[in-house]
Length: 184
Image (cartoon, rainbow, N blue to C red; front, side, top):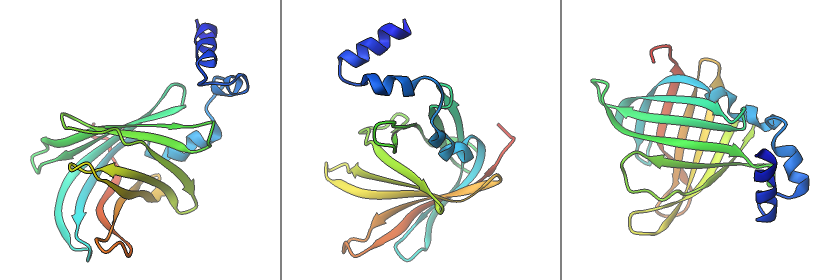
């Protein structure tokens, strides 16, 4: 069956013969780029204005696990009210592409209109950096940047940045501080 699937992909142009030997033996070394995210995290979400003032803050949780023999990361994010009820949630699928040597990801919010805007990522000494063009409700595309930083075995910080209206720079508009959790 596996041979049939590889042949089918090869015939359809998705996998070349050279790539098929790399796909199945084990996860690429880059799979460890998101190793820090695996686990259960209690978080604090903050929405910020361009001057860095906190406009909104709420508890949240983030849960991530490997799938397909460490070749993919699946993570679920939930924003909570103060009583612990979920008010917003979504799932991210992340996989490392052997073709372009970058992470490719999509996020899908629960029960909301969404376009699956794919984004790419890479890891360096400062953290994991992600870029995407998000489709706004009016159909326009808006560039966005995300970053995981301050990564340790005890937690991490995730930040979303968007361009200033003038286009002359970026500011952090959302921040999540995560700490290891054993509660769920």
